[in-house]
Image 1 (spheres, rainbow, N blue to C red):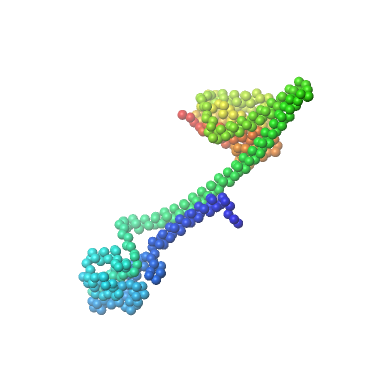
Image 2 (cartoon, helix red, strand yellow):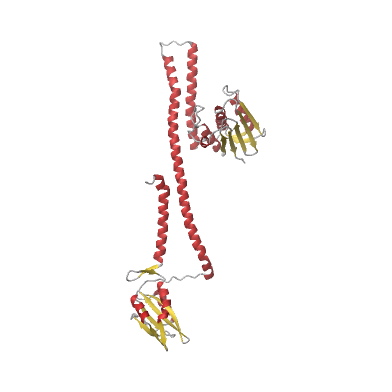
Length: 424
């Protein structure tokens, strides 16, 4: 199966980059701790040291005269090495294939320099032999460029710290891998959400276009009828036509206003006109105004504030719009017998709750409640309006620094809570 674009972007590419980093690190470690012999063989950079330490087994003494066994000589020849054995006084007592440039007697500092820096393209390693209570030194030259890196460390701390270094390196690798996977997952989720929003936006544009055509059709039809000089409708008909035209014009204006408002809120082009007011009196006035609307005057709506004096700084026009959208949404999508209770509680920060015992919502409807362009999935209620009402309510509450949440279940009802933060 061909990988999707999102998989390549958010999972495959980061994984390849991480693999590249790990391979680079592994190559650097390999390259740093290996060496290549003259015949192209790859060996450990520690091999010359270990070879030198082990070579003592091939050296024997006859009195004070050292000798190298046949096996030892074969090893030297096979690897292109030379050997020089020095007496305790630093005098050469045996040499095999030693370069002519090397002296036959050494001072201690000269040995140190030779060991550290090598000579004539050879790295030199030293070993010791004990014979008759005296210490002999032997030098082995390797046709390699092996650097002896000197570090000054607290050996006890270093020995104990090596475990932590390894653990830290492993945890870092795991963390990088986990972050890569998590980043890919989050990015993929964001991409899916973006596509979902784009699809919702496309559907909304199609629905809005259809909704605009709906009121424009009677507006145009009745306007043409009234403009027709041959038609002579009686005053009652003219009044009826006018009412229909007014209703559809207002509906068209609502669609346009909702679209304008949501984008103003989203882009920050609509600053809050906030001032200190009594929040209890404000919410009560909103409820009364809704109940004074003929469509909802018989509905059972109650308001129970925790206290009468609730001073808060807010934009009355915008907050009224948010509360209108929430309360009317509850009334519109429930039968007349359903009760809606509104409460206000808190001190500095406040919580406004709109709760009904109506039909409730499915989880799908609840998930999309505050999404722009969402109109729900219920087939029992005709989808009207712009589909932006609850999204606008959320944007207004968030502009005040607050949050809005909803709880609902089919047949149980819906509870929407606005939480406004405490103010200094």
